[in-house]
Length: 355
Ligand code: NAD
Image 1 (tube, rainbow, N blue to C red):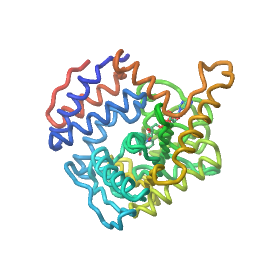
Image 2: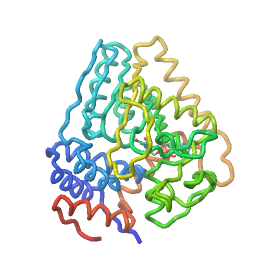
Image 3: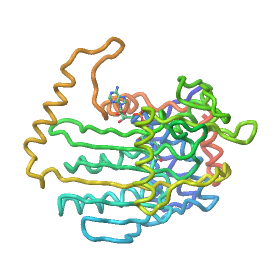
Image 4: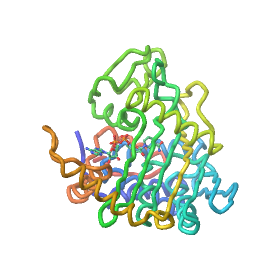
């Protein structure tokens, strides 16, 4: 069972709940817009379904509404920022504005951000940079529950550590690669579990380290109170990239890495993010960069299309197509996710329609 919602209704409803959970109106609007934007772009894992978790995190004290980004160190091209456990959507945007300014001024900026609550869809931050003509690289770690098993390991030891690269392309939408280093995002397991779907083989192991297709193993505690785990994408290579995200997004930022047993009762999700911004107009390669980038993408897309595919796409294109479609047709939300949103709203004394 699903219900269909317009983006506009969802924005209003989410903002109402966020205000009731303590956010100032501007913060509530920013977070609500960000969540709905994730749904519009096809990433329901990072859309309005996160709201219950955010409300719980506020109520348990791990997420602090109305926090501002704190500058711990600033050399002009190096920024070290602390998110003070604020909403990642707001802290992330404020941090990116600072970093973008510096990259435009100096040609590049290396920015570390620690101790921020869940940043949501990392591509949002790369989009902020590429519309300004900047290249953006992001390496992110997740401090919440170790849901991903190391290559060769049989239990979860770290998070879904996303990596994102945005490259502006002259006269066309950017290359926007944005993915969890687990084979699938944890939030997609929540959505699949809520919809009663099984998952493709080679994605998950259960709480005993055995292969399974049941997403429940990473969503609800299993019979022995333990969770299963997601596997890394790309075997040892994806696993290596995930470790790099932990070392860069967690250790280098000062936000911290994961190295303790799970506490399933904790709802707070903290992210650490290393961001590298480059202004190609400050390098002597601007003309070649534009021409060569376009020539390569055209070359990719001029090749024959394999059976079972409609086209050769580049990263970022699927999200734009989904956005165009969902803006017109609306956003589907499964019944369980909507029930959870309604319950979260009730916990801060807001009544949302049951459908
Ligand atoms: P995904 O597997 O759906 O897509 C990953 C990337 O692949 C996107 O850049 C997309 O444009 C590209 N892509 C998809 N189909 C393609 C095709 N046919 N051809 C070319 N490119 C294609 O993403 P995911 O791993 O499920 O991640 C979803 C979101 O979750 C991301 O936005 C990520 O930032 C976010 N995330 C956030 C956190 C956090 O803690 N904040 C943690 C994990 C993931």
